Image 1 (cartoon, rainbow, N blue to C red):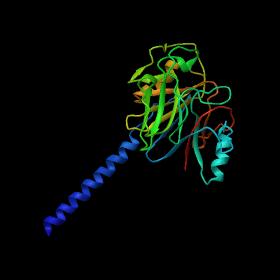
Image 2: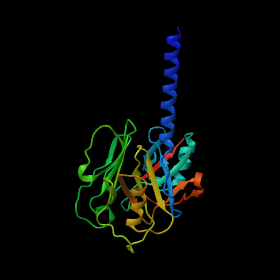
Image 3: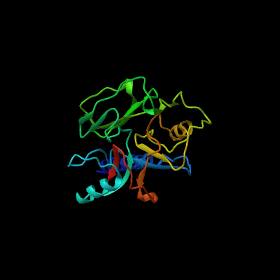
Image 4: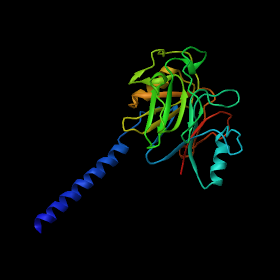
Length: 246
């Protein structure tokens, strides 16, 4: 009997240790402070992260205000939103876009073109139906039926722990920018500059925070809705929206 009690206590102790370790893993990412960058960490395994484009009437959401109001009618609260990639004049996604496992826009593998989207390599941010989040370069992306959401954009900011080779330190190419990176623990780091910033410094923010891969989402039109940090840019007119609800 004493032996059984000892084994039970040992099991409880080990279980508690595992729980403590798991909790520590969630909190051990301490972001590098930058007063000019707004950031938000998302755990795709425990938070409801989705991509949005069109409403039921086939019109674009276009901004966070319309998305927020629609979600509220369905009993959902929008806690975070950011524009999720570049888009065409009609608001249609530029390049690959997958929503609820349906390909609504085909991948663009064009290697030469005008603008940031075609600054090679560009990439794809996607989430599987098992809530595993990935960022890969477009050439290495392989479509499969496990992808729940995906958006293509460019350029990549960080590739396998290295800054994009076309970025120059001290560049005068300044703009508002937003992007997403995958942290070492699998969570996602979304960031938007509060002031104009160059690609080199923006990409460095993701690299310094441990992101081995990060993707640029968009530039001067970028907006973020994050009421928990007193940042509520509800207006806008863009394509895909990445949002977190509860």
